[in-house]
Length: 251
Image (cartoon, rainbow, N blue to C red):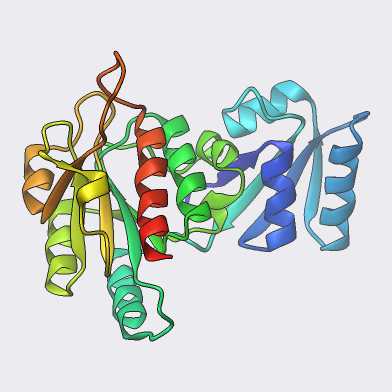
């Protein structure tokens, strides 16, 4: 039996209930709350036939592992987590479509901070990314903190943990999907790179960037021009800049 997964925070739970993007097993809510948004969530969940359990704030923190739960926790079963085989099927189907929208994937090479992962998911959803690929081991996983920061995107966007990220990038290349990685050592600027056609954007780990093996799988490496005193950007900020530049070029 899979381990329960939790979403915390008013906005995240509201969007979850509105979208129906994941199976909600139970809503844990603060009893005797004076917050009308919590009361609204309870009413919506009750109308949908979802089990509702009252709990104090300490119990909510214990259940979710998140102290800033805002008085509500949803226990869910995600429907957006894919395995590598499902990713391959999705890629094949998308590449056969003729809707004029090229495939766009985001690969994250071992992000450690769940806040960064959540922020990347939120931006990826907004930018029209088809799926986010991450290593199964040695990286942040989906959880309450990620879902809260992602503000609903973690329950909407296909999320693909894989055993070997380099292998996935290799077969994506065989399908004609170009791997565009970011590196402060790259000679080519993001703004001068060819960003047309199917792309997987590959972002590196906090502080260390892309690993040597993953960088070697990228057909193109680009940098973000830095005009000021700082030498690098937060990975979620850099991800947003890159995704929106790809989107701008495709308009």
